Image (cartoon, rainbow, N blue to C red; front, side, top):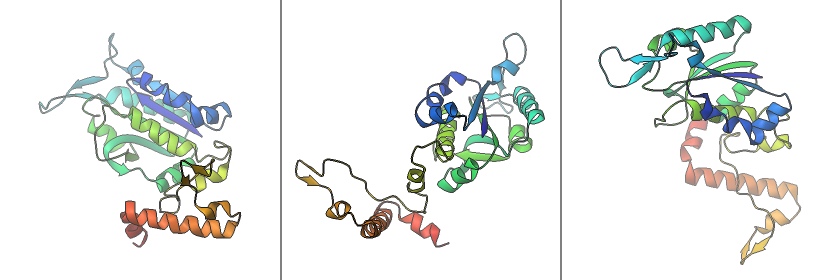
Length: 228
């Protein structure tokens, strides 16, 4: 998989994309992440990438020319499955979306900044808009790293135990069961006996019951959505 990320502040992406599971996946050659500085395609000596908002509203807007130039350049080099814009009014990121995108070959992620991007970019260049929640961040860089992490950890080989990702919350439309490790007794706080029984069938039944109970209590809307 190849992910091209377009940003006016690429420095914000350096740490999240160079540690933990993402770094291991990159080192193994499972994913190639290329960060592009949109300013390199800016106008004039100052590499201008933003301008005033038509209509007089407050805030600067990312200009269409630099973004168009870099996307068209990339599209000439390879075919992209999606050209994604990180936007608070996009589709809310969920596990199914992450699963689907993890099977793709090439993705572009555009990180907005300032007041946003020229609407024509969204109308004519973007194929999918994604939000990480009903709130606004200073730019799309941090949301983009969240999308990358959600996708990359699903690629076979990215996690040492590949079955681990399959048992995460939301994979079956519900939350995961509680997990425990040693010691079995700490300060009188004990691990449930069933987990120490060594009986896989009973353990799986307990885990499912706990997952359902936790989902009903904490995220009941997930069960409502699964019935639609």
